Length: 561
Figure 1: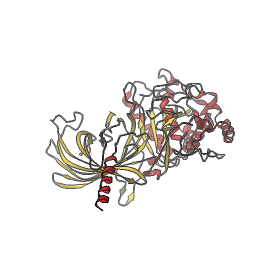
Figure 2: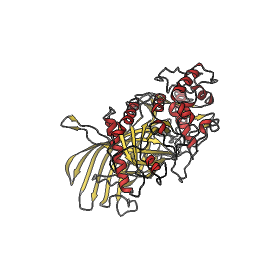
Figure 3: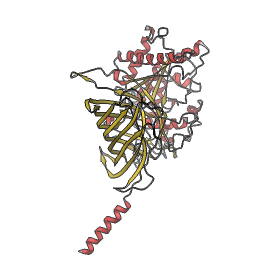
Figure 4: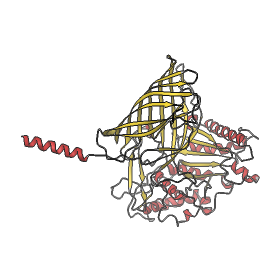
């Protein structure tokens, strides 16, 4: 009996010794993040109310900015943040309205470290969590440096406070049907304005901050992405005029994923009202692949694709499954910078190339599910396409040995001939033309989603008011957007550059909001729009001619995916 008991103990010890885990960050998709704050606020010791608001964001995979060196393992993101205040007044819901985006650009390294490139205060938690390079077993701890951006007085001035966090690995578990790791975190707030860790760009009247935090963190086992963070806060902030602000309560952050859309149906609908982009000065790849190749040719190219299936367990995606291709043609494309073998010589890749564009083409395929399926599955048949392209748009299955002779190819090409002749005829031309053959609108694939560029919009002079002549274009755009009823839309305003940058910036923001309002009047929920302006900083044509200025005076609408 003793011998059996001893054997069991040896087995348990051996199992625990080998059941070790290494966590690293390898996020590869766009996502939505919500930061929900519920803090009791005390000013000079007196309770002054509950600070309650939510910061929503849509964060899209991107590329390193021009001239910035980056490792293959680095993940770059473009973020659009907006603050959603309390929406109930006297038990009556108020209109959420159209949101103005707060932009952010950052990268996350394999160890979880976040480096800000464009910093407007969001995200408020940076490099949290970070990971050790060591193998972990339950109970192991490590330390990591992070940062929080705080604005206790709601001035719009964020102070960045360094934090040193003690992490403890609490083991693996299942969360909403997904394998995850649980991590405990604890740290002290210790900020002194005159100290080495003060923020020269922060609030100069914030002289000191003290307090403590305890947080529970759930991260995906497959990617190291944090999908839920619950932080218990007890902090005090001291200001130059003697004011003391205490905040006690919780900050909760959770990740959501965009709802599934019928990607192909959207592209065909857009192709009826707009021209397909040839090449874009900003480096976005076109969507000719869907309009110009049969689905079977994609499958043939993806014979050796290694596929990872990710189950979305939270948020508006409702637990739907997204299959993402990790490599196309046997070559890894997870670094977002590799060429796709066999595609660069095709007629669809003759457009002007820019650094990183090949990786973006890989992204386009991943979003549409091209060449993807369950890893380890046997060959599957390609899903049939309905006459109106209303189904099967993003259900192209991975098939070994499938070729162009598939019976669905003929149907596909027949529909294609009716809907995309203009796109095919212009497949080798660059997108510097006006696009007047299709309403002066151009669409293309970007890392954030399908983007429609509406050129030469007619506004009243130096105004954001849309002229009546734009009614038909706006009607057509609204009908297309209704095909993605649960999606969010990023609307970006652009002006011609005529030497008045401050005025141009303001005008571009106002025009983006007004276009959103026009679309909301056509049945798109106002809360689905996120707006921002770029002034004349992103021209697509020369500002030295009236024709070029007309093209630069545009609005871009991205269906965020």
